[in-house]
Image (cartoon, rainbow, N blue to C red; front, side):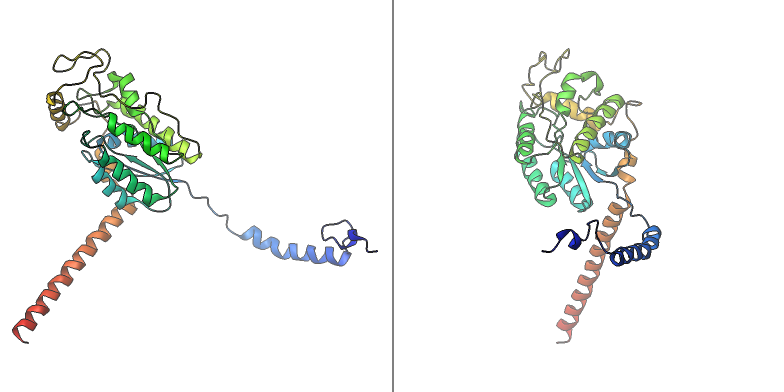
Length: 306
């Protein structure tokens, strides 16, 4: 019979010749292993796209997300169609998490606009984790943000792991942290919003399930202790678009002096890859325009001299 112990490579009865061969191979590989440069582990990449709320939020994100590569592309006043354009301009497959902060500037009477753009983002990013904050916005013609927030909730339910920081619920509970337009937060509110969004990003990176929104959706109602412009009491909805128009005018006037961090650099000091993408697109458009001019000139020549 064969003693199986003497045939096992890792057994205690390995021959001296085998031990010597292993030892010499180890000595040969050791210098290479010692001299090989250590591979740097790339920091997770997070893409953030949004409107003026994200312009105000993003300056505080690095504080809550140390070591995370943040790419921010946010333009005030953007609706979800325009924010999807920002996403297409900025997205790279190396991004681990995408914050799609949209819907505030969408007409609440048409929540399907947000639904369609979320669907397109999901189709592009595949299994990557998305962060989609709930929406606190204006009531238009008596229609609040319940429909848009229902879209957010249904989208999150269809993609396990999608995070929905409850900005709408936060505003309802902390109206004192909002500007007079009741749409944009003051500095303290902006930082608190960044903490909410950062928590969603962290949960994405950790692979945690979605934390359900306690309230579900902003009702678009008059906040506690406040009175509507038409005399509506706390908890009531605006019966017309008058309050919406007044608030929109206040918003377009810009932030109250001293109440906001400087937001412009977030958008205009874009990371290199976004700037390069824009420059490449412009070069392609110029090249296409030159090609069209040459083609038109050739066609004209052929018409004159057939």
